[in-house]
Structure formats: structure tokens, C-alpha cells
Amino acid sequence: MSKKDATNLLNRYRNGQASEEEKALVESWYAEYTKNTAIPEIDDRELENNHDELLQRIMAELTAVRKINYRRLISIAAFAILILCAGVLFIKQHKPHQDQLPLTAQKKPINNLPPGGNRAVLILSNGSKIDLGSKKNGALTNEKGMIIHKNAAGRISYDQTKHHTASQTDVFNTILTPKGGQYQLVLSDGTKVWLNSASTLKYPVAFAGTKREIELSGEAYFEVAHDRHKPFRVISNGQVVEVLGTHFNVNAYQDERVIKTTLLEGSVKVLTNGTSSKIKPGQQVQVQNGHAAVSTADMEEAIAWKNGFFYFKDDDIQTVMRQLSRWYNVTVKYEGQIPTREFSGQMNKNIDASHLLHILSIEQIHYRIENKTIVIMP
Image 1 (cartoon, rainbow, N blue to C red):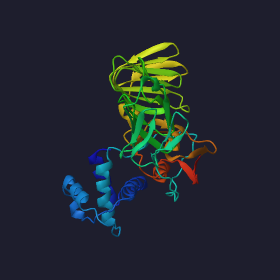
Image 2 (cartoon, helix red, strand yellow; image 1 turned 90 degrees about the horizontal axis):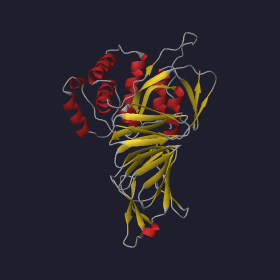
Image 3 (cartoon, rainbow, N blue to C red; image 1 turned 180 degrees about the vertical axis):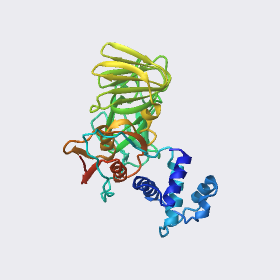
Image 4 (cartoon, rainbow, N blue to C red; image 1 turned 120 degrees about the vertical axis):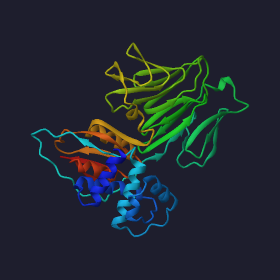
């Protein structure tokens, strides 16, 4: 949604001309922004002034929350649009088949399902586990001559000690992110890894020999440190991605039909079922049933999760709900015959599931929340 479109929407809201769907969208933006933020009072005339000046004033004058009133709602909604216009869900719904009855939106649910965060478990070579979400920053442990550190940004790294020897390099760690978790780490060679929710990465604490090899289940984004003498290999769900130094994303969840490897920088080679596919930046290899196909990638879609967004592109409700299930740590069930619909758009992941589901309900999706279960209904 462009800044112009957002402004027009706010004007329709203020003049009482917005549809019920548009009202709900504005109020969802407002709910998201005010969730944990103190807001200043703003005059209607200020809403007509330069948006940049308004934004600067709001940023400078965030104080205690005052009584919500109509003018304040409109003003804050304008600000929310400015800061969220690059990541607001504006879902498009393809019309249902003629034999499907139209559905109506339901009221916003009371149940709150909080978003995920930096949560992971590190399994050391001796089998002991470290809960990274609860550990303080600093040195965590000495793993066979490698010091494992956790920094303030929620990232772990490996630093070699003076007593580290080559014979100690055949030692593996495993990091697991649960549903509702994500984490970052820096491998011993300097390679940076962003691990998505419900994912597992197994890797050596130090790379020996002539190769760097790790195993992935789930999804991860890699910025591989270049070393022309040691190719970097990612083994995931029946395929191998081989690189020297590059930026790429691998989506290899067991419950997804297609494995997607997307290249942002450099070059990669994807090996699967005896075939090899080499791609360039902006391309993607999709592997399904052992067959690989190269296509132009939607880069925004591929790394939206890393940048803090859900991204839907002509996805059915099952695909949408698989993403929500991983991030909000919930179970999804379906009752009856669910109408066929496709959704496109993006939304900030740092909101309660109830807000996102409320917007889906505007698009004629019925649901109910039962503890940690979302039930999708006709």
C-alpha cells in the first residue's frame, strides 16, 4: 500500500466513508502500534501538515498513554501507516467458486496468542543442552577448545582458544529452534546463519579438512564466509547446496511439498537426485519429488521471515496457517469443507495471532481459538 493510498484510506475513515473492512484494517494498525507504546495527543490540523514533521514530533514526544479519543485514533493511525507501510498485511482474496456461499467476518477474538522470539536450544557434543533464551550474555561454555559466546543481540558465536587443536575439530553441536522461536549464530569460519522457527542445524564447532558441511532441517538464511579452498555445503531434506561464499536462503521444511533455495548474492549449485542446478542471483531452485526446476525468484517473499514479516503470494489457507503454526507455536485444525481461497500480502510478525486472524476473518475466514489450537471452519 502506497503512502497516497494510506492517506486516502484515513480520509475515508475520518469522514465516515470507510467500509467495515477498511475500518477494521485501520483499527488493526492502531492496535498493533499501541500494544506496547505510549502515544501523544495530536490535533486534527497537524494531520494535514507534513507527514515527516508529524513523525518526528511523535517520536520525540512519546509520553504516558492518555485517554483514547476519535481524533487521536486517526492521528496515530496515520503514524502507524507511515512506519508500517512497508510491512502491513493488505490481503487480496480471490473470489470463491459460484457453488460456495459467502461468509461473514466475526468479531475480533479475545484470545491472545503472542508472537515468537529469540528462542533456541543448543545441544553440545556430550548431549547436554543449553536454553539460549534464558541464558545471560557472555561466555556460555568451553566446547572442546572453542568458547561459545552469546551477545546482546541474541546471537551465539564460536571463538578458538589457545589450546584448540586439529584433533578436536570433529566435534558437532546442534541448535534447535522450537515453534515460536528463531535464532542467529556465527559459525567458526565466520559464516552467519539466521535460523527460522521449527528448524534444526547440525554443524562442527570447527571446520577441518577441505570442506565445510552442515545439516539443515527447516529454514535458514546464510551469509557464507568466502574460502575458495573449502566449499560450503548445506545438506537438507534430500538435496545438497554447495557454495564458496554467498548469500542464500533454504526452505526445507518436512511439511512443505517444495524445497526452495533462493540466491541473493554469488552463485550456488543445488545437487538432488543425481542432477545439478546452478543458479544466479535472483533465481530459485525448487525441488519437488526429486525433480529440480530453476525460476526467477520473488526475493521479498524468500527472505520476508528474516526481515520480520509474513509474506503470502497466492497462497491457500493451509499454507498461510502452516506459517502461523510455526511462529505462534499453535496447532491448526480444520472442520468441514474449507472454501478454496488464495491470499497475497505481508504483515509484521511482531503482533499477536489474534490480530492477524481478525484481518483474515475480514476476508471471510471463520475460525475459533481454543487454548493453543486454531480451528479453521467453513
